[in-house]
Image (tube, rainbow, N blue to C red; front, side, top):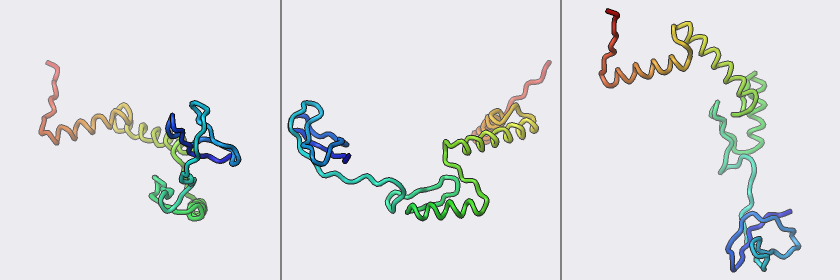
Length: 138
């Protein structure tokens, strides 16, 4: 069923209304007569004006054929490119997080987050010229 924009004199414009091609449009608000308006088609997928951009590698594909060729090349090279939010992406993030936590703990921190807080605080002190005060038990 095609999607149209319609306009009612009393209620104005309504976007994305499903209508049969042969049916006369009616206003969704008052069921009165309305007129069909021309609207631009919606294009799904990569195009020259809306390319597919992979955030992990920076690859840009302007057509679906370019995207499929790029995906085939990645698979041939043995690379795993996971879309954000996919199960593969989530597993990779969890694995990297565990690895970072382990490395931070070996460095004497409580974990990755603790190490980041300490490093950021140290950089802030260096930037502002603030000295770190270490108290010793008396």
